[in-house]
Image (cartoon, rainbow, N blue to C red; front, side, top):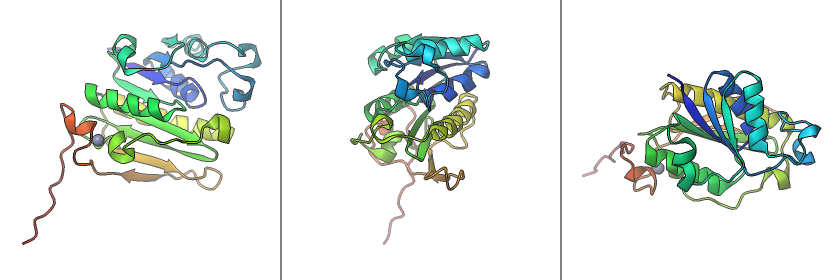
Length: 229
Ligand SMILES: [Zn+2]
């Protein structure tokens, strides 16, 4: 059976994620509205100067195909309304976008449709990767609401950081896609990859009444607080 995955974002994180999962034989749907800019090239090493001005999603899909994989690129913002058409049969969805709203939308859609997901973020010298699956605490249990965050375009990111964070995201995605729930409901935190590549792995508890997972078909089981007499 062919496993399928949706990759949201074809930049610094999406590049290593897509090439890794594509190389593992997973059929990819890659969604990204951007075109390649000169300022991307130091960290988005799937692209070359010949790609400037061209759509990232199609180029990255082409790179996967050139290596023997299967992928299609869509030059658009990922939105839950289109998600079923673009990748409704995906075994997993992986976000490597640079947009907090998109990350929450991806996580909420994955929770609502009962599939595993990975949300990756990188900035400056570090980043974090969340692994989610039905029945585990979700992205919104942890972060609750999108907040205005600095972007790589504005605040910068060290080139190798996206390779490292993207690699971790791909490894977690491969595990989850094959049913490994070891890290479901966990956040891998890399504070500063120049100092340490050892993540803090934080397994967090479901939030009671979470607006995303508490309504899911397979909500997390809340551990009841002990009653005190
Ligand atoms: Zn939740």
